[in-house]
Image 1 (cartoon, protein in one colour):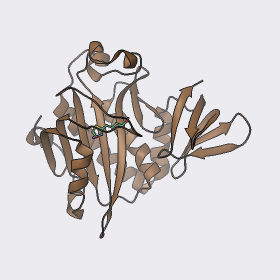
Image 2: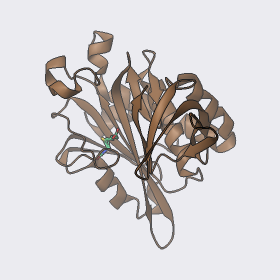
Image 3: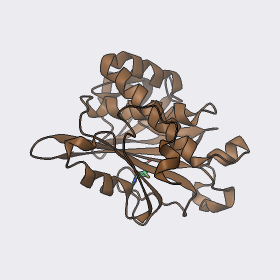
Image 4: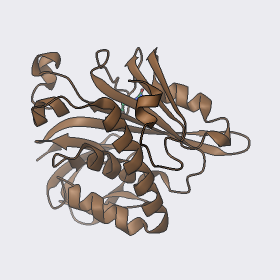
Length: 254
Ligand code: BTN
C-alpha cells in the first residue's frame, strides 16, 4: 500500500486530503495524535502495514501480521460530534465500506457472519487551541483461519475468508475514507440519520445483553442507542438505563 494508491480517485475534500503510509510504527493512533497538534491536519489519514503496539478498546492490544490488515487512523480537528455519536457514526461508515452484509455490535465492532472483522478506537486529545479526535480503525483483510489464535477462531474473521476473494486494501482504504466523509457530514447535519442507520445494522437491537459498568453487571434488552448517552437498556430488574461506550462493555449475549 502507498499513499498515492490510496489517494488515486479519492473524491473526498476533507477526509483523506492528506495520506501518510508507514511500513511499521507503534500505533497509527499514536502517530495520528502527533499530527493532530495542527488544526490544518483535519482529515489526515495515517496507515501502517504493521503496528508494534496496536491498541484496542479498554486494555486490549490489537495484533495483526504485516500486510494482513487495513490499519489506519484519521485525524479530526474540526469535528463537532459528541463522542458517543462519533463512535456510532464511524461504525456505520466502516460497516458500509466493508459491505458484504457487515453488521455492528455496540458500540462499534463490525461483524461479518457474526464474527468480528473490524474494530474502532476513538481517542481525543486536548491542545491549547483545539481538541482533536483520532479515529483508529483496524480491518482484518487477508487473515486465514489458521492465523487467528484458537481462542479467537469462533469470534474473528477476515474479509477474504468471508468473501472468498482477495480484497485490495488501497481500494478498501479509499472506500473507508469516502464513507467516513459522507457519514461525518450526515451525522453533523442530522444525528438521527446516523443513529437510524446504526440501528438498522445492529445485531443487538431487541436482544438481551449483559453490560459491565463500574464493577457491576446489568442485564436487559437493548432498546436502541442515544447519540449522547449511549446504549439504552430495558433492565431485567426494571427501569431503563443508558451506558456510555467509554466506560462500559458487553459481557456476553444471553
Ligand atoms: C477494538 O475493537 O478494540 C478497537 C481496535 C482498533 C484497532 C485500530 S488498528 C489502527 C488503530 N491503531 C491502533 O493502535 N488501534 C487502532
